[in-house]
Image (cartoon, rainbow, N blue to C red; front, side, top):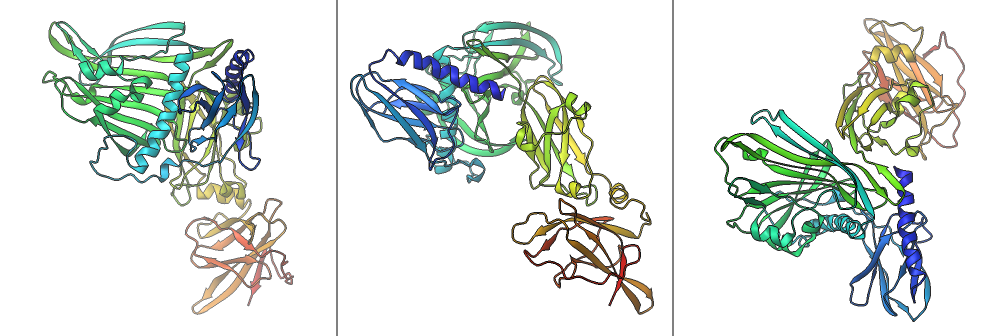
Length: 576
């Protein structure tokens, strides 16, 4: 999917290049970050005339290139938009007749972090989404996504293969009673299209006729329209949708009218700032007594072609169903895109999600900072080396609560792999878990590290498994740089009771390996343990609270440990 995206950008700009060759004047070039930064592929770049009107638009290629034929000589600006980054508009470029103007557009990388926006908990509803700093910032990211969807629709270059379905649901359990579906192939029109905005506002979102009712939803054109904004007020909220943190732009009618109105939430992904979905419900809707209003509504899910435009990928609408004048359940109609194509290129659609939490079996606490990778199950079954997290699109790291979310997964069978510095220090590798993604489902997993007994047996092979002793595992790290330091002798010190009022000091040591890892076994669990690089005065002290303790040790830069005479017996030494 990622590789095909780059071809999508190249095709789109190549078509523009063909048109511009016959034009009288052309502006073309590349887009990159400032100060010699990287080229920017997949940016939505617009050519604006002196009045600020957009006259051309397209996505930059994988090389950050673009080419526009201008309608005539004059002054033009370029606007560069990226989801999750501030919009950039250039100074005006003056073009004369028959001129070909090469330019390099340098864009300051200014990330938009939705998770940092302050969301007030109140009933405030702004008359326009451009009001209020946080709301205006979120709306700007929404606008970028919706405008690419409208742009792609107007170009007419995308064709979709999708299914439409209808289901009759039981009134209480929503179990499927009847179902029909039909496949549509290579349709040039968008798979989901709503009634024009002015008609929706005027006649309402539900039109009731003598023997039936027509329920309506929204598309990108309606959401961007002046009529929609004029009829609604807007706010913000936060929630977790499908296991993923989202920022929602809420909307509701400004005033109550006789027609059926609509309210809902436009959900954006907090991490990527990409448009995720629109959830809708109906207001002022007359229904029978047995009908649960909470079950009436609609949802429109958006996705994005790799480094290309957004489009509607899934949608459904649910409303009461009557037979012989009596309410007997709900009817739900919807659809799902299976494939999109542009020219000779096509993309299989899929955006299943794997969510879950990783826990430390020793402490029973969530494990933050763990690498989570999903790779092809057949590669795992063939014992191929796992990829580096930076080299696979389906990877992430657990947050402070040990949670992870990996999205954008096409249907298939995956191997879920979890790794962590603690596990690497102990020389432990978790078994990969089989995950099946089909029909865009959300799969939840709870992953536990090995038990304390398993870890102790792995870290201290051949050692006593008596209940009263433990092990410390860690990494020797450079105090300044934080990097692992190999070849450093780390010693642990503790005291052993000999009788009433008498104790003997004991220490054991281990040398850090090539990755800075060390493990020391055999200390008692009923007293403090001091840990330090051998021959240095500074030590860290901890009270063992589990069979295996994780504890890194800082090593001063450029200060080798002083030699200490070896008085050990089986790795243990007396000290005074």
